[in-house]
Image (cartoon, rainbow, N blue to C red; front, side):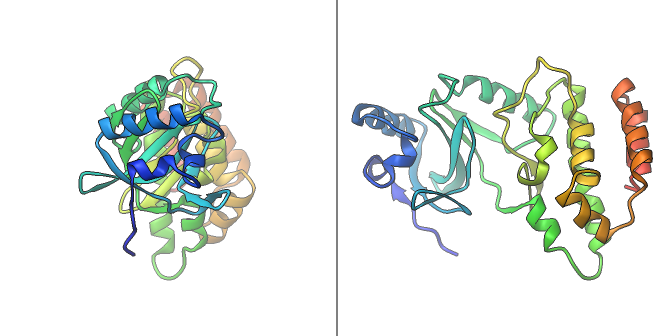
Amino acid sequence: MKRSFLPVDRISQEPYSAILGYPRATKKQLALRVAELEKLGISGVSFDGSMTIGTINVLGKGYAGIVVLAKRGTKKVALKIRRTDSPRKTMEQETMLLQAANKVGVGPTLLHSSKNFIVMEYLDGKKIFDWISELGGDGSTAKLKSVIKKVLSDCYRLDMIGLDHGELSNITKHVIVGKSIKMIDFESSSLERRVSNVTSATQAIFIGSGLAKIVQKIYKVPPRPKIISVLREYKEHQTQQSFDNVLKTLKL
């Protein structure tokens, strides 16, 4: 489907200004944000996505920012807009965390950033919950195992660099499955707290309620006490061997 992109100066006008300066912004703030976007090389924005704010469609909304589809040159990108009511005054911290994740091959590729924006690789795909919900037919088990193994391997890489994602206990909307399988949304991440990426993601996929029930219909997972036991061991040691043991127990 061909998407239409509005020129950047148009999004400072209603109704789109409600997104550019969400939840509220002065005309001066909007003008400064347009100038900032132009400096980043953003030529257009498309209000497309499964989430709506008012009457406008967006790709995602968090407590710190809103993500929309944008164009930089001829390339589609994901643009994260800092909310004006965000406790963070700049995007610097989140940019640094995404850079750290990228260094170990995790997350959407960071392309550019500024005070109020992060420009990232656009991931065309489905949220992991929707992807698993629609899975069916021959090869479903193998496909599912392959995706889960990739997610947990990314979690292990983050654990190894001491970066805790922070939202993986609610993994359903934090992984995109398309041509690639990538974790998104690092606004709650931290390099300070104890990491729990592998344990949080495993519990969300295999033990939590909604997603776990769907996974269990597709392939026979080990008993809950066995999963908890192997996660406890991993939590204590966090080595390649203990991680491999998690994968083995989960039949991945």
